[in-house]
Length: 286
Image (cartoon, rainbow, N blue to C red; front, side, top):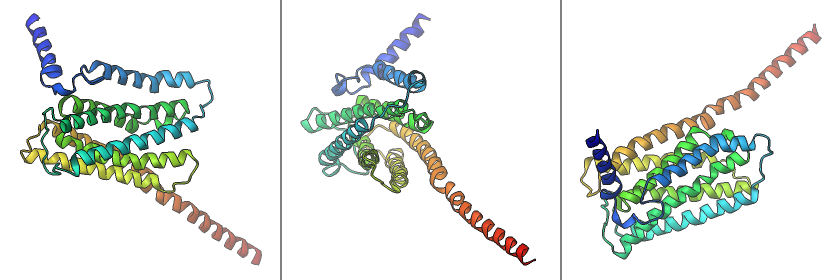
């Protein structure tokens, strides 16, 4: 038993310390997994238990101004990170096919690693979106898809910051920050009571394209030696396939399945109205 416990301790030490990138271990919330796990635990407890009970006998909070500030902040932060990842990497010497990690302490390598940590911190900020749902008593929007996506992104970016802060993995941040700039512009306009029409539908399409591109990008690791660890592909490919299934199901129910119902009701009403008028005319003639 004692030997088994020693093996567990040694395995934990290897995963948390030895296998990690030493350059990012002093970054806030990265050295140990427990603060991040505790944060997610509190997040789950608040959105499912604490928050709904707190709001049970209260009126929804009016958070229009706070939401506008939050959405504007998201636009600015995502745009800055998008600019960073483009100018530091993808518009310069990064390859869209294979890109190993630069584990050196060069200024550029350190700035990329710090950018990935900043992206992780942004995913913590993203959790406030669910908190706002609860405080506005929109609990129906706290769906499995919504919560799973936020929890998965936070864990994924923590892993990236701790173990693979650079190279191939930054492609996800490239496409995701672009999508989020568009998405939060939509949210900002909506919070200002500006009609954005069918933006939501096209943003969902953009998210589906994003997941497909990430699958293709990580799929390269499976058949080619990219000088990048292969294990992220075994996580990211199934993860993004699952996200396509979840978002695809949402898209189908919201924009495809509803379409014939919406169209059929007026037609049926119109047809019934015509038949009713015809029957009335016949009865009068008789």
